[in-house]
Image (tube, rainbow, N blue to C red):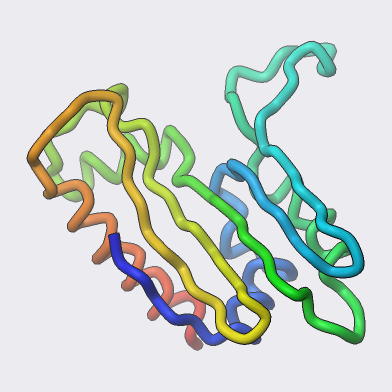
Length: 155
């Protein structure tokens, strides 16, 4: 787990207006403006005619909703958004970085975005379905997130 301080203006542009985070799974979020808005990314499958195979929304499906809440003359008082690498991307991540875990052992590779009214931070996280002392996945995820923000966001 690492904590990255981000350029809020640049990152918010990528988060709310661009496709940079579209492939991420949206786990949950809350935004405080004139009200506190709490959004759970869990899909209620009974709502759909064709049941989705995935458990959570993709960021691209809720991005516009967050933009509508945050847009305005005043910045939010705070927000928290939790994104996860999509399951298919997690499998590819393990293969690309030659990490010995099976995809079904990994619960999630997370980006926890937190804005406190002044600073925007990303806190990385990993979660496993099984106990392990092996930190190779966490270390590689931390490096990859640093590279992601350096290449895609801070341009």
